[in-house]
Image (cartoon, rainbow, N blue to C red; front, top):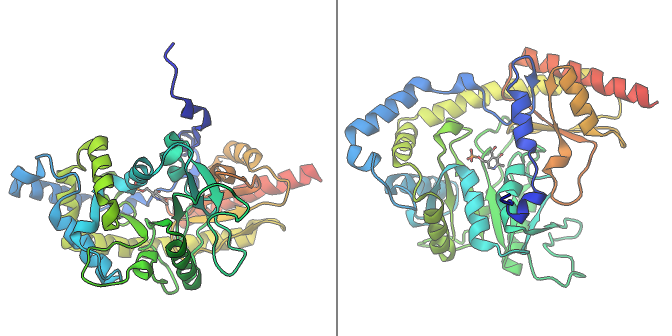
Length: 400
Ligand SMILES: Cc1ncc(COP(=O)(O)O)c(C=O)c1O
C-alpha cells in the first residue's frame, strides 16, 4: 500500500472533527472561527465579479503575475504606509490565496527540516498545520527578563529561523500585545537577526481601546523604500469582507521577496486575478470598510453577551480572557479538568467548543478551551454558555 509521507505521523484532524461537529444543525457551535454570515455583502460581491469580468476580461480572466495584480498591491502598500510602515512600496506586497497561504509560503521558503520556530503558546492551529510538512522544532519566546529571548542561552542550537507573532486579539486567546512588548520584540529581532511574522487577520475587529503600533511600523526605519526590515506582515479580507474570496497578502522585506515569489509560483502560479480584481473593486467602492464597520458593531454586542454569560453562569475556579477585539475568548478550567472530557459532554448537550490543547506546539494546557463569539446571535451564545457551565459544574460535582 502507498505510504503517506512521514510528517503525517505528527498531524491531527482536529480542524476536520471540529468543523464536522460545528456543521450539525442541532449543535450550537462556539468552536469555529467563522464570521457572521448575515454580514456578507452578497449583492455587492455579485456586482463586483460581474463588473470586473465584463469590463476587463482580458486581465481578470487571464493568468496573472505570481506576486499579484499591481493595483491591489499598490493599494495595500498605501494602506501600510498610512498605518506607519513608511517605506513599504507595491514591490513589497505579495498577494496570496488567503493569509493561510502566506504562512505556508513562509515555511516553504525559509525552513529546512529541523529548523526551529519561536512563538508564544497557545497559537494559531493553522500555522502549525502549515509548517508541519517541514518538520520544524519549536521554542517558546521567553518573556521573563527585560527583553524577549528567542533561544535559551543554555541551548546549543542555532537561532530560530523566525518568530511567529499574533499581536492583535490572538487566535486562540483573544489577547493583545502591549506597545512596550511590541517594541521589545522588534528590538530583540533586530539584535538577533530573527524575522518576525506579524499575522494580523483580526486587526480591523477592535471593539474598544486604542490600537498599539504594528510590529512592521515599529521595524520600518522609513526612507524611500522598498522596505527591508525584520518583519513579514500578513493580512486578509477574510474577516472584513468574506473568507470565500481567499484574498490575503504579505508585506515582505525586499531581500526575501524573490524566494517567496518562486515558492508562490510552485504552489498555484497565481491567486485568481478575477477574485483579486473583485476584491480591489470592493475595497475601492467602500464595501469592505462598510462591512468591517458592521462587523465591529455586531461582534462587540456578541462579545459582551459572551462575557456577561460567562460571568453569570460559570462556576468558581473558571477564568477567561476579556478580549478588546477579534473572535475568541479563552477559558481556563480548574486545574486537573480535562477539556476533552468537557468537549464530549458539551457535544452531548449540543454545544461545540475547542479543547485548548490543539493550539500548542510544545506544552499543552489540558484544562483550557477556546470559545468563538462571532458566529451565533447573543441569545444563542447565552444559551450555549449556560449549557456549557452546567456541564462543567456537573463534572466538578462528580469529581468532588
Ligand atoms: C491567526 C490566523 N491567521 C491566519 C488565518 C487564515 O486566514 P485566511 O487564510 O482566511 O486569510 C486565520 C484564520 O482564521 C487566523 O486565525
